[in-house]
Length: 249
Image (tube, rainbow, N blue to C red; front, side, top):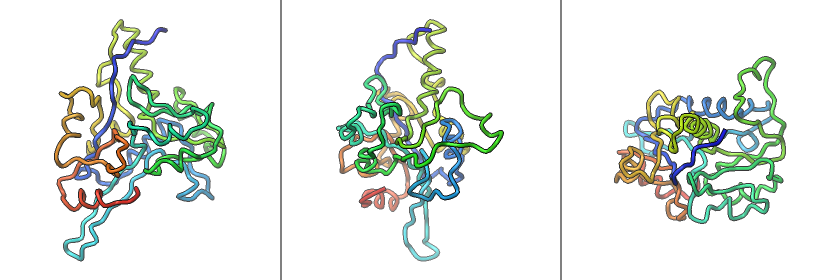
C-alpha cells in the first residue's frame, strides 16, 4: 500500500511538571508499545533498558517548604547538529527531515556506543542481553514493532510505529495528510494527568507550539544549543532555576 505523502512537520512535546504525579504509566505504556522486554534480574540502572524514565527534582528546602517534581526523561529529539547523529560511524541514527524525529536503525548499529557517550541527556540504552518475556507474556507484544537484539543501542522514537499506522490509514482513505489525532505516542495517551502535550511544532496554532513558547516552558541543557524538541513546563520558579543550573540530566 502506498503511504500518504507527508508535508514537512516538526514533532515535539511539552511535559507539564505541575501536572505530572510520577505514577509511571508513561513508562509502562512506552515499554509495552515498543516491545521493551522486562528487565533482567541482574540489570541495574546502568545496564537496564528503559526508553522513558521518571526522575525526581527537589528544592532542597527545609520542611515545610520542601517541594519536589517528577520529570519524565526520554530522547529529547535534538535538532541542531544532533550529537548522536554526528558521531555514529554506521549511519544508524538519522534525523528525519519530514518529521524532525531522530530515529534509530537497529540493523545498522554495531554497538560501539559512541551515541551514548555523545548524548547529553543519557537517554540511550545498550542491550546487554537478548530480550525475553515470561511465558505467555509474549502474546502481548506489539506486532508492529520489532524487538531489538543484544549488542545494539535503542531509544525513544516518538512511537514511530504509530506514525506509520497513521500514514497508512491516511493513504488508504486518499488523504495526503494525517489527522493530528491519529498520531499520539503511547506515553501521551496513557498519562492520566494529561501532563504531556504532543504535536507539530511547525503548526504555530497547535497547543504544543503555543505551550513550548510559554514563558514558563524550558528545555534541559538549553545552553548546549541542541534544539531539543522536548520542552518542560512549570509555574514554579525554583523548578525553572534548578533546570537551568543542571550540568547533566
